[in-house]
Image 1 (cartoon, rainbow, N blue to C red):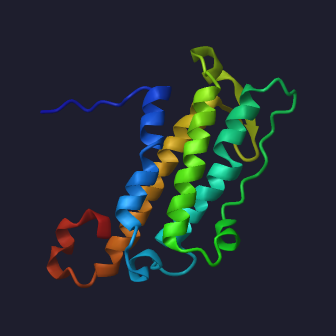
Image 2: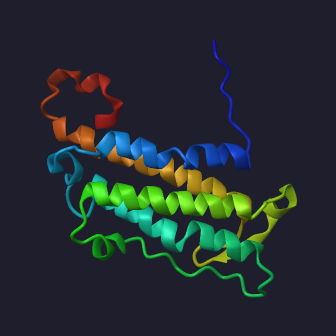
Image 3: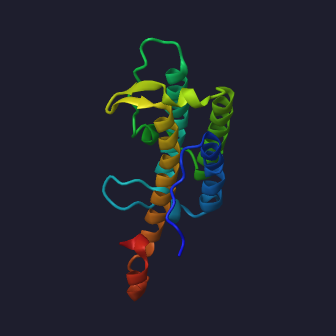
Length: 179
């Protein structure tokens, strides 16, 4: 039997995952019909299109800016609040392919900035002030960035899978993604 293991934080392993997210989303979503990319789970839930817009907004206004603030010499290290819904205005009129291209571009630029910060082990415990959570560390911020990507990849695949929830018939019993 395999041992249940968790990985401890590693900046290089974090970058490993962060640099793959644009390619994962591109392979999953590029050239799909809008039936797949515009569907959601009803109500105010998000489609794959919406999620990509959200990821772009985060790249432009959240992760790297907050990391730079934590590492700065500024006395005030309060984060600006993040607008979780900005993508609805920011992506109007764009195609999924345009969004995927933009996400890849801004993510690559942010990873270059992240590498350029030359983060040392002792930097990971430096803090900033989150508007909701209060004091947070650089390690927590980067760990959340990685997990945020995985969360949204999971969300996209779940939303897409649910489009065939009825059509799978009795196999729904074996499909955790539909429950």
